[in-house]
Image (cartoon, rainbow, N blue to C red; front, side):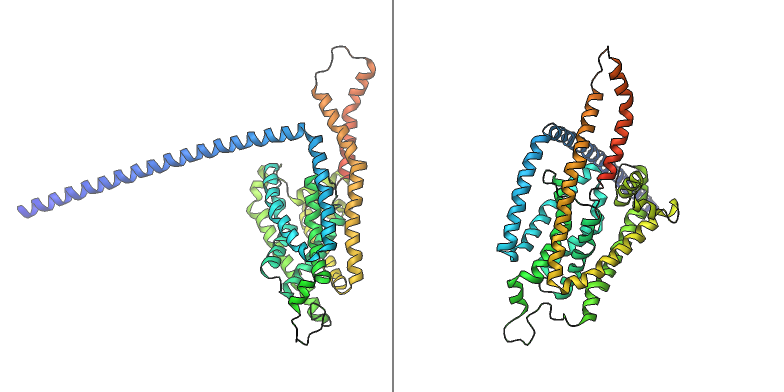
Length: 397
């Protein structure tokens, strides 16, 4: 009897302990759920506060747009002049200027683009390539093969995107200045390393060696140049293209479908090309509307192959390389002038019309004013079409 009683007591005690454990587990689960709910509320509140502050800052910036544009123009001109002086006086410091620019402005651009729903632009090839440039300059500055891959990226797709996508050097716009420098600065950096940097030459050519005083040492080996200036960069580009397609068109496809305001390079280019009905829109529709994305990838691949092939003669010729630098800078300045003369006045007119339409109209209006208001939608529509066709801007390549 005693043994049966003991076993019964053990069962009861085990049941009580199990119940206590179960209660503790429920209590902890409840606390975790409450903590999650509190954190979620705090996160939503923080997000609302940040959104309100961002809208407030945007409104204040819009109110003081004229003054901020003047300040930006002043700093942009002074900065560009200082950079040109440094390029001639101490070309060996240009890579450090580029690294400083990247570390400061790319994170700021991510914050700004995240607010504008343009953050998928930062997955474009130009940022992928610029990240590789930063790794090369800071961690592997003496690696000849990596230098040649970076040279191919900088003076290939990035440099020609500056010309083809009409990047505009407008000193009154921070966004346009950064877009130009993202594509222009890398080429200037590798130009100085290739031809003007005495410190690099000294590091690459220690005294007592039998190698010739031309860097890299393999300029006579055309197969080596073709491998590291074309084939390896092309493989790296293909890797980026596959990753980009998987992230944007597979993993984040539903997110993009839910929110049409989120912009990608393909969305922006197709939107502007369709409105302008330009050659890119016609070429992308050769296989039908359902295959425009495929045609866009194919055209971008052809563009990349062609521009990378051109880096081989540019790499071998100092005169050709100098001429190419002048071509890039001239194109950016020309596009900036076109924007200021042709596009910006129309944008100002459009803003003024929007402001006038938001104001309450007077009760009595003469007949001429009524006719003008009836025609205003058509005028605004034509103005928007003109702006879209004239200012393709610089969609990130």
